[in-house]
Length: 460
Image (cartoon, rainbow, N blue to C red):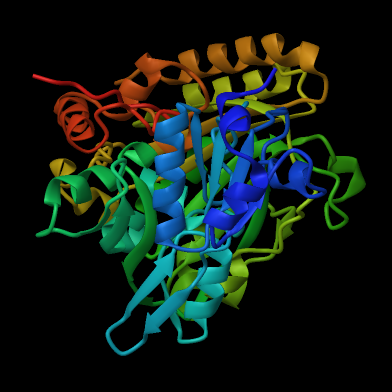
């Protein structure tokens, strides 16, 4: 059965209309082009357009409006919901828009949103400068930034959106809008945490910080309840220059991990101290003293080295849950140990990120990201191989989250899966949601940008 697109427009005609690459189901690279980072999504779009410029972006939006086809907007394709690809719709792929203009003197950079965090960080690192992104180099700048951006510099320099000075956004009407604190300030507020609900962000103006050599890398410790709770306590007490990401999980069969420890619970921690070597060693000493390290790769490195090379063939299938907690005490640590031991997944992980610092000093109402006072971001995940296992792992991750999340509801939108409106509203509590739906009505009244963690337009 033909879609409305296939019955009214041909691929050759579309190729004549766009400067960028138009990919259809008959093209040899179609399967590669429709693949997103996470496995388990086998969606077949009618059309993929790798846009070359903002004119192409506007034309894709016009095409989506005229045909009524579902629109997916893709930067790096890492979203936990698979929303970077549509079943039977149109994919607007930004991956060919990757220009970067660095002003080292003013410490700013204009970056197109097809760039990845690793590419940007490598380029700015040549000047000894950085903007804080997430923890994976292959993530696209678009989705990561629009959702907030929690990464290795979050305690020292805040969220990614705290270094967003301006943006260029193509809204649903096809207009290219420059937005900042004075021009379309409502839209600028909304895109700092509100996700891709308000338009296609094509360029960002970022602030750069002097971040050259850091003390960083992997520290692996045995994961007892006592070590887990003590690790979090030390991370909260550490200077703001230190950001930690503690992955509590079975030890993977890495060549540098002793074979007898494979499968045993460990804290695989990524440590990043944005400062000098001596101060970094002092800040890390309490963590090394918690237990005899299994692996200690923490050392002075250039900041871009915190992003190791990614395996493009790695497409894990997983279920997950994101939440905020305000403490990881001994009881919570025991819950983490017990739940991870009870999981039947091929890999189960509880990731703990202590927040605070610069992120928490920005007023809650300043951006659409509204969880600045929460102390710890938690991400739970179960990786599996067989589709018939999904329901069991989904039940496990739900129980796990319920046991840990005794406090105020909350969710980090960049870690949400397809979990429904109630969970989306947890990402935008209270008046934040009301303000977002009103701005949505102004800039996208027909909800063209709906294949996302959707904020529907509200009128009246």
